[in-house]
Amino acid sequence: MPEANRLPAARSFRDTARVLAGTRNAVAWAALGHATAAYDIALSYCEQRQQFGKPLVGFQLVQDSLVKMLAEVCSMQLFCLRLGRLIEEDRLTDTVSAIAKMNNTRKARMVVAEARDLLGGNGILLDFHVMRHMADMEALHTYEGTANIQTLIVGRDITGVGAFV
Ligand SMILES: Cc1cc2nc3c(=O)[nH]c(=O)nc-3n(C[C@H](O)[C@H](O)[C@H](O)COP(=O)(O)OP(=O)(O)OC[C@H]3O[C@@H](n4cnc5c(N)ncnc54)[C@H](O)[C@@H]3O)c2cc1C
Image: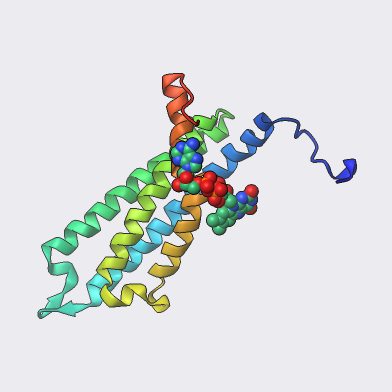
């Protein structure tokens, strides 16, 4: 590769890690977007879909599922709010972006899986979009480092012991 193609200011893995801190922040936000969309779709679907003579939202188990989803979405929002404030103050660290990426992708996978379940058979059709969010979440779960790798980054920080190998 010609020397002219070298990225300026990219000299070590530490420089790469700074990029990854930023992209992991973006993944945490993207996961929040997918989870919010899946929650919204599931809520409106359950308001409209009638079974046993009433809308699905009238069943306690369905409300339990919707409320759990909402609680996870709210916790993801708090992670994103914190990320935004740290970036504003130029204080975002590898550890914070790793824990936010790990938390939000795990939670979003759970939320889209609940949404897919609440839509019954329609949950696997592209027409209702939940399956699109689920497929996107699988990519977000893996790229910019898997949840396992984010866990190891945070684990190294809080214990002082690297457990990668
Ligand atoms: C849609 C998509 C887009 C991508 N885009 C890009 C891109 O633009 N640029 C780029 O460079 N890469 C990209 N990737 C690659 C992505 O970053 C890697 O797939 C990811 O880092 C995981 O690496 P791997 O696939 O080699 O899995 P592996 O490293 O083989 O991991 C497989 C499994 O083993 C686990 N594992 C590995 N090591 C450990 C360990 N030490 N302790 C515990 N568990 C461990 C992992 O968590 C995972 O569950 C993309 C991937 C996807 C799916």
